[in-house]
Length: 420
Image: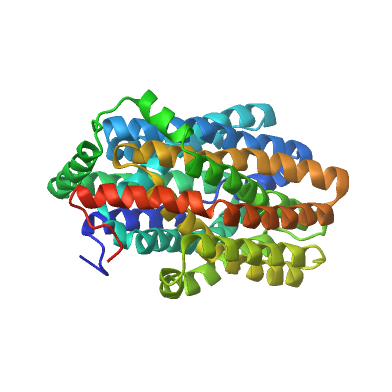
């Protein structure tokens, strides 16, 4: 155990850290389409949105398949498939073909996402899951802070290099994961048996059908209300990688300024994410989420008047503070809502939020900026964050009852219930 978390967790954590240091193609795709392929802002938004729509398929089936066949095959297969697609994307110069390819790439690259989230819930005791998901988010943010710096240097030579570099990172990390999974197979088997025991304790079979898991998830009001609210949040929040680069480009700012905004966002998160764990542990999940939404609204409201690089940096610093708790605490909440035998399916349904919003955000951002201007986009995003904060507060009771039910079932199955 390291920092109260098992080695089974830390091997995956290290892989996530390295993966996100090399995950930058989609963040720079809008600029690639505009600057290198010569498309307009509206077309660029439509093309990039295909990645998110493809991810809907990957998340929907990746989680359920991981419940049926295991987490590791979904993680390894998805990462290797993503590497192959990235190499193929580098040879495409038609916006129409690029859109179709991004649809496929989005589906493949999203398969591991719910499997990873479910894996963490499998191997980490309930009482430590808030820390585990927060540290996972820290790894993502650290990689996100470093990635744009690397990408910015690569695109100065050739945009194609960023495709090859990310593909190479995916292959290298996947090889590392294969070795790790084999070395830790015995402990992973023990974790799986604990999950099976929990499934039997609540009267279900650990090999329950995918259809039954989907029915359970889609009729679970606490989960689905969370999904709907987080969809509104992410469509607005992902304007940082869709609407923001277009808005900055219209002001004459280029990849240097945009990459620095993303790096500052990641750097702040890296500095504050781990210290924030102690604060989060003293607050309810809902309170952390609501405060995060309100702070994000303040940041985007400040962005309404930004007309220079310094203005965007100040706004980014504010909405970054809102992000501190939003992502990890939302993931922790979904893990707490899920029955043990359907963790992958619940995470898959929840991660549809991210894929759908990655598809919708570029469309919304490009369309709003083209029709009404960037200022109106930031006003609409601010209003959305306030509405989501209100919705989370109103649905708090339903989530807490569902979490209490699952904690009781986990306790009966012999696992720590996280309340002591």
